[in-house]
Image (cartoon, one colour):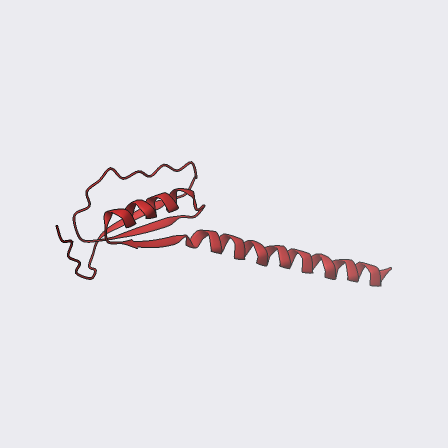
Length: 96
């Protein structure tokens, strides 16, 4: 009887350890989110669209410049979106 109790205790500890490790992996992966670096209007809107539905906490880093447009972020998720501006990027010339 004592051997059976030790075996049950051993398996219970293994199961609890496994659940704990899996939950750490799951929550760490979800907490990281995605980081986007954008340098024009189309990249900004694409990042906003992706961030609205990817199930992660996201960060959008915006290179210095002027961004003209009506940008939309429509999310039904309970996730965070952080926008950081003023980043330096490569020089780009738009002819016109």
